[in-house]
Amino acid sequence: MYFQFLGFPSASHKIDRAAIAKTLQRGAQAASCPIVPHPISFRSNPRRRGQAALCCLLVLFTFVTTSSDAQEQKPRRRHAEEAIVALQPFSLDEPAPVRLAYYAPRAVPRAEPVAHDNDETDSVPKIDNNAAHPVISGRRDVLRNGIAYAPSNAPATVKSAIWATNSLRRKPYVWGGGHGSFNDNGYDCSGTVSFALYHAGLLGAPLPSNDFLRYGERGRGKWITIYARPGHTFAIIAGLRLDTTDLRYGTDIGPRWHTDFRDTRGFDARHPMGL
Image 1 (cartoon, rainbow, N blue to C red):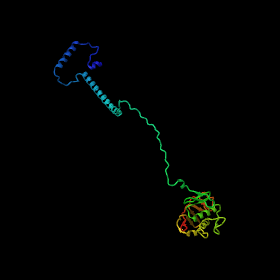
Image 2 (tube, rainbow, N blue to C red):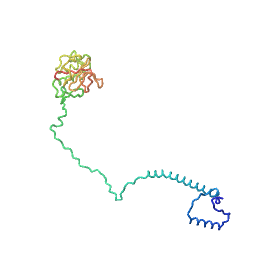
Image 3 (cartoon, rainbow, N blue to C red):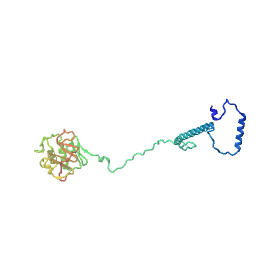
Image 4 (cartoon, rainbow, N blue to C red):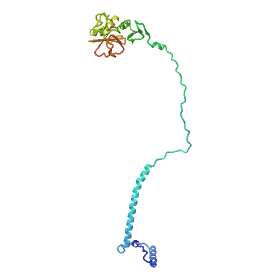
């Protein structure tokens, strides 16, 4: 039935050879004549109507599949173009030999001695270990084992004050000590400073802390500076602090030399005239 619907004779029908020859003859005549379009009537022949419908379906199916394939190929082409990497240029020449860097030891010139006008040993402080009058070269005294070494460039009055105060390094702190006499069993802060100034020839009698606020001249001195306030007094002599307060350990209280400095806020700085 399917072949009959398309216009082909089935196997059950007999082939009419005369009809086939007649049909071929008509086709040859039609090919030799100009084609004149004329409307085809599908109402009279249902077989042709089925053939036309089938052709339309085939054309529609072909169009749909072709458009879908084209849409799928577009992203593939785009991805393929993005994946293309430009090839780097290369050369077919023989590769150049590899050069290796290596360390070549060089002769290091030796340092030559430089001639100086003065020998370097002159800058090293020289120490005179005299037990009674220890001296060190320079402008600042040095503290060793509680004993202050007077600088060699200091005036004689400053050296005398330093050497005399070394004798107090084992004396205890006694409130009011050193005020009744310069030679006492213990000393307080103002008594210690008065003792040093007395042996420097700069003071005739011990002074309390309040009186040191008016001693000498205002400001710091070149060799001796006295810091005074109501209730406490200490002195800086040639770079060392003469004080009865132990700021480092807090246990060694009494007339001692100290290498560390202390806060001077609240103190008035005074110094002997000319020193």
